[in-house]
Length: 330
Image (cartoon, rainbow, N blue to C red; front, side, top):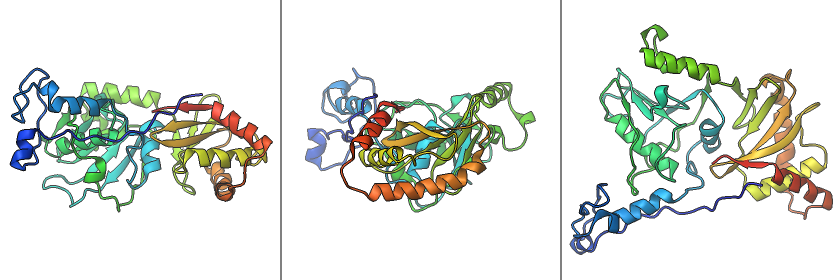
């Protein structure tokens, strides 16, 4: 059984005594560890503001997408879906010269972000990040992409510990509606003939590795995928883990946790503070065939979530089995 990582809170670096005395809210830039701290304290950066910055890098924010519209879909696109895009809406609207901002699961050459020739921005989601706060890392990349030269990628860099999060930059009232693609041709808006050799090679590799995936339309954040041996349904759910495990155990013990004949609930992932139950499906069961059984299971699950009676012995055994088949992705 994978261990659950503790949730931690982000810590803002302390303002130096000189800045406090002046009553100023100083944004201290990041410099080399042995260089004098830019705050003017006279100490080296690593012994002053760098200490808080280093601490923030090692901290883990368990639910980086909490509070954003479509949190469950954010998690799915980060961990489960090969090729997808989502139009993003910024607070206060788009800057001049930026016609659109689009979230993409992956970008060519694993770029963190790209500003296209027309000024539009693509923000990559499935990249390595420099700290334990994925939301802050992505927000920093997005801010730099908005001011990058058109036609240029945005490189990765160390993120300031007190920078904004996605929750500070995105309009949380705007809909989050993923479009799942069969491949990565969305990288090149006009024609793949216009791609550089490097991008064309990256596109070919990405398309070869992509697992066919479809988002169900009748329930939230449920994704069907096809593999050579069998198909699967991966469903990111917003409920607290302990409550969801109890509810799934009740259904499993009652024999009602499947999606129909030859399907079964086989376990779950943990990802960014949420739980992702997984069902094995027969190879002949496509996404359309999942729609009705998934909607019916959602109704059964909702009733089980409302039950607060103690688990029976059989339900406890079912819960133990589900717990033992959990895998932590992040």
